[in-house]
Image (tube, rainbow, N blue to C red; front, side):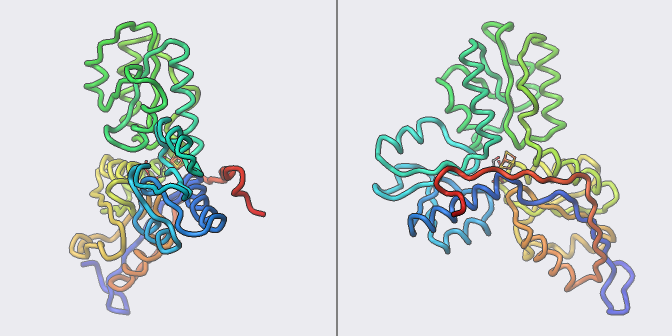
Length: 320
Ligand code: 0CH
Ligand code: SF4
């Protein structure tokens, strides 16, 4: 333990990364569910967790949202919202066929990747999609084009192994929430092997993902440990843990304050704190309050970027 203060609690310097927490796409997705409940009345169904955060999901459930994994779990005649991560084209098509009212909370930056996928296939290119197998965003993006036009690349080894039918007609796209550094290594491998590979216009990794990774990188080396608030199924949150660890600092993901391991913090004098794009600020405050029960906490926010992005709501859900 560090030297005790007058209060008897040891001192803890807390470096808090900024930006952290909610991004514009998450904000929009949550508002879509709330407005849908106001407009249609409860229940409103949501296909998949609207964002990967239990606190957010539980709150919306309390307001009248029902979360399901597949569209066939949605009864006829009730509205359904698609999550921020995006859905295969077959999902809205099926909803239309069933006459369901649906609201698409797919982040506009994910939708942008969907449109790029369509355009690349129209241009006759095979797509190398850099992402994590089984993630809903990956499933959604694969579902924008007919089977066989896209190959998943998860690692540099995958990029080294891939054998194209036509090396001159390739494009790559990526999941929005990847590690900036890992993705750069995969892209470099693809560009070395296939110099003609078509790159996306601008970055597919979104502004929120890269800002949160830069912010945690900026504090990690000054800390003896880092906590990232986020869910284990939250890709962008897990990436923040990895970024901190790459700086040589032990890092852990926690969902709530009750997961703080005070034993782990025994010799820590400077702790880093951040939150994934789906973790609300109230959970950051909850963690700090819990730390204050054991430490004399000295908070410092380290800001590496300012964000002022907001996305429009779908038609029909704008404020009156
Ligand atoms: O980071 P992932 O994609 O797992 O999703 P999340 O934790 O719900 O954060 C919001 C991003 C949603 C789509 O980019
Ligand atoms: Fe959109 Fe990026 Fe947020 Fe995902 S992490 S919802 S792509 S802004």
